[in-house]
Length: 162
Image (cartoon, rainbow, N blue to C red; front, side):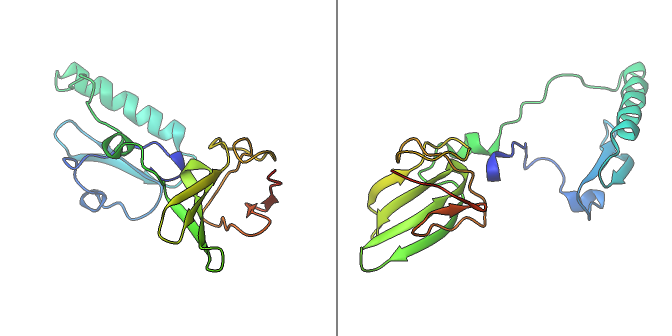
């Protein structure tokens, strides 16, 4: 779910360790019975994987062992719904002003609250971008290095908020 990366997980599938996955990215080709046919680690292997999958599909289709019904999987984000914060990256506390500035990374905005968590306002449209503007129009791309400051700086950029 982090950084709007869409992936599907399911608790019913065996873990990566069951298929000796110990590097990223690793692709493992598994037959309909759950046995490993092959695997490859690293990037740039599209052609090899594409050919292996095509041959495997054809083989098991001919044998009548390929279930081609669509899988019913859901994104993890669908399970948790819309949350007030999505992967808050950094927090700056302003004790004198009784405020917290929270880099709400996956919503691409700054959330300003009181120290007790009461919402005061949000800065940013929520759209990923790098434009100056009013509190509700400015856009950010926040990453884990994002840190709100007096000049509100993100990913090596400074936004002018009016």
